[in-house]
Image 1 (tube, rainbow, N blue to C red):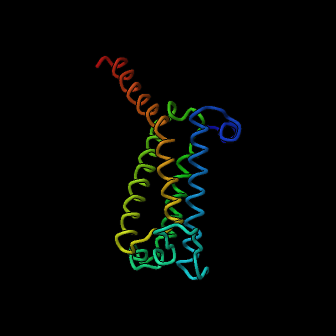
Image 2: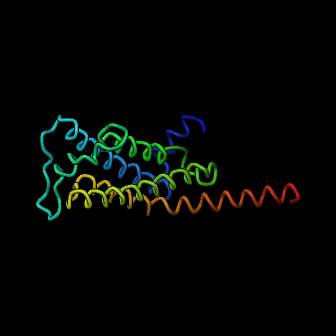
Length: 176
């Protein structure tokens, strides 16, 4: 797609799919912000994470726990930041009609967001299992992942239908 057209479509285009993609990008930025805050704590820039007075929430304890540092010899906050960045990138890739013009992109986004939601649920289980508490920031990000999954579904379904329709059209043209 021409970069000028892409710029115009992403900034000024109007369609239900594009509106939902904008929400997914916004939710990904909220998740990334939560990841930045956790990362600042996990690396000593912040000395504590303030929590709302909610039962079973202790972000300091959860984000300082050994399991939060058990993957790839790094705290999990920077990994979470990269993860939400990739989701935002996939949501911003392509023009407003990408489900029909390039259906593999929204399908990839949907698979990525499904992976995010499953991973977030597993991490919440680990948080509780290890600490009998949750990280407030991580759970906000988890909610963003599940909301994004619901938002992605219509475009993913359109993309799958488009992909299957293209396959049937190609078979008809080739006489298969």
